[in-house]
Image (cartoon, rainbow, N blue to C red):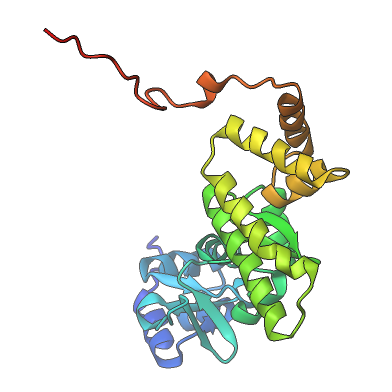
Length: 254
């Protein structure tokens, strides 16, 4: 008995004409009730699913004219160069200059992102930190995150100045940004000692304040503070091999 064959060109012609279609529509076009058959044909044709509407819509890659953000839409149905909503949110956070809050992402992506951000945070694929009372999401890469956080603090300060909100809190943003950037270039031990020093400057509550600012554990800050107070610092181990001032040897005159 001969097996039934389905022509993928029927789907291609339909998508070229209407740009997008649902699985149900494509089943009718192809003449089958089997979803997997349609999926296979979509893969052959290099199609993408929408990141909005729970991936309900499909389109040919060749017909998608992505904008500078890697997005394309038709009739409020959104597609991304990154694929799914999870992959798109993650890519946006990684590539951001100053991280994104859920509201900021939702304004750009035109869909709810809160659940996705929560799952990414639980899976340790994004880091979130409170800035001016709201959660902002950053890269988990320490170097990238430090730069993103520093820019975010600078933006908060600039925004405060535009609104005439010159307060001690806002004036401290520039200093916080400098601390975060400086910390990002230190090795693990140097960062611990530096965090302990900043904690000592603050006094009561310093460990938690510095830990929140730098995105590290408060116990790490406390350990650094204790090492400084006890003078428990081995300079030779902090300095890189070959570092420091070169020794001066007296020349022997003949």
